Structures are given as structure tokens and as C-alpha cells.
Length: 192
Ligand code: GRF
Image 1 (tube, protein in one colour):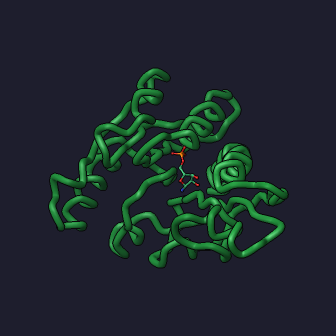
Image 2 (tube, helix red, strand yellow):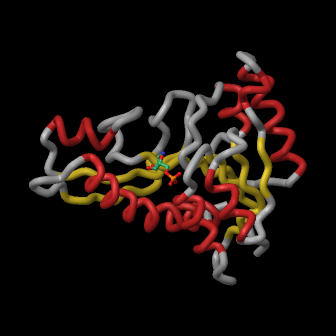
Image 3 (cartoon, helix red, strand yellow):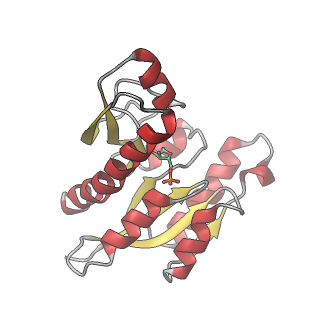
């Protein structure tokens, strides 16, 4: 079966993108990373993607002032040109409109650094520590119009340890993220 053509959308560091690129190097992996797109020209992940021979594109949201849909139409055009089958959001820091989400219904994944439905939104590690939870983790889910709320594909739990700071907890969760995102993409790519 032909590999699914995947784009990873990033805004920054791109460590989850790197984990997807690494997994997709396996000949038996059912998806290829055909394109990495950033909304920020200075995203560190772009250089890594290029060093791996992956096509990259920048759709700079600042060029579209406050017109979110114009930004998304430009993004959609790039994805169409590259014949993309699946979208993976990986630290992509733009809210998406119902129109764009609708274009990718059941074909767009996101990774969130918490055990959804707990701790939607930002600063998840600080909030997990403040709440005193003993177990935290990461979730890969399909993207729906409401943020951090689509159907869950997979989750990984990590313990919260005595003395954890937001940084130590984030590092433990990030390891889990790098493990489960390639697994979740495999599952989705094999499933259709
Ligand atoms: C990750 O923690 C991810 O779960 C969240 O943003 C962070 C992105 O990190 N959505 P990276 O750019 O993948 O390194």
C-alpha cells in the first residue's frame, strides 16, 4: 500500500516533528513526512527538517494581519500542492478555524502535553504541579473545532515525582510524546 503523505505543522523547536521524521525513515512505516510547514520563519525545527532532506515551507501568519482564514487558505494551498493526506500538528501555535478543521476532519492529529481531558490549553505542567496530580502525561488526538477536545487516539502516563519542577516534568512528558506520536500516526495511517 502506498505510504500516506504527511505534513507536520510546527511553530518552534520541532522535537516531536523530529520524532516523526525518525520513525518515518523505516521502510515499513506506513507514512512519509512529505512536508514540514512553519508559521514562523525562524522556527528551529525548519533547519532540522531541511537537514533530513524534507521539503519545508513557511506560511508566515504575520503576512495575513488579522485575517485568519486568508492565512489558512494559503496553508491549504500548500498542502494541496504537496498532495498531503494527513496533517500532524506538533507545537503549532495557531488557533484553527472550523473551516480549516473541517477540511481535515479525521485526518489531522495533534499532540498535547497532558492527559486530556485534563489540562487543556497552555502551561499544562505548571498546572498539573499546582493541582497536585500524581500522574500526568501526553495525548495524541484528532483535531476538532473545539481546542484540545477531539477523539483521543492514544495516551501515555508519566509519574509526577517529589521535587519535580515544570521543567523536569516537561522533560519526562516530552520523552513520552516522542514515543507515542509516531505510534499514533502509524495507527491512523494504517487505518485508512
Ligand atoms: C510539545 O510539548 C507539544 O505537546 C506541545 O508543544 C510542544 C512542542 O514541542 N503541543 P516541540 O516543538 O515538538 O519540541
